[in-house]
Image (cartoon, rainbow, N blue to C red):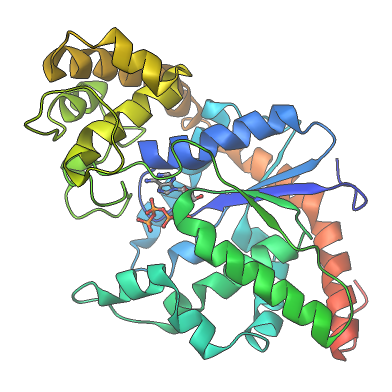
Length: 341
Ligand code: AQP
């Protein structure tokens, strides 16, 4: 599968908590679409476990969630015959390249990162160096495979911009080495919002679970969460981005539209004479029936850790030599003696 001449699609998700409908619509659904659409590309889908260490973790839970995330990758339709699926910490080049990229990244650049500002502002947070340097590790994840296309949700746009800046800085300081990666952000669903606080992104680390659909949760709970999602007093099933009051219904319409591949205008027409109750009831069925097969497959796969380990071993083996090759090139360019591997 490995071929350094080929263009590469790459993305990852951190196993910080259980994955959400936001992760599915904003990222994973796109991973699967791109897997089939870009047949000539190398596809690397990574479980970025080192990123997860930037916030406190219970070790046994992190390990279990890493397997759960792998099971979800497979359950949504990633195919290890078509995509390299592996764990970030299994390829040591990620951290090695990070060190070199750290030396090309300004403190000021990292200080401007919105996610760092948000996460470090949370009360009681231990602001560790890893949390601050997180975007450099992300740049290394991408540049280690000289990736071209990066499917991400809207919140990762700023980090991707920084990866591009770091790649350009390296190319300028030494000589052209890295492709400048391009973000692939879905036109719709790039920022799924919290069902209770639609002004906030749906996040796996949300303080309250009420507004977050967890992909592996009991489906009765999923249905309840959709039915109790906040809407507005206007009672019109209408998308209006200019009106902050409509943020709740805008979000529900977006979820409906992305999961059914239906234009929002069509959905508005369908519900022109209906109330929020009917709309939410239908939407809860759509979400539940989308997640049911994914959850069933996930639960089944999670019982077979040997199989999951095998997938990870193969995925890492597929990418290892191209990663080392690129790293050796980088070592030489910066003046290090490249090791004989
Ligand atoms: N609400 C969302 N809507 C659309 N896309 C989303 N993504 C995350 N939340 C939404 C996309 O999912 C991918 C993986 O995200 P990540 O695990 O790297 O971390 P994140 O972006 O910080 O996502 P979370 O869920 O908010 O994680 P925590 O709470 O741990 O920080 C990315 O492509 C992201 O854009």
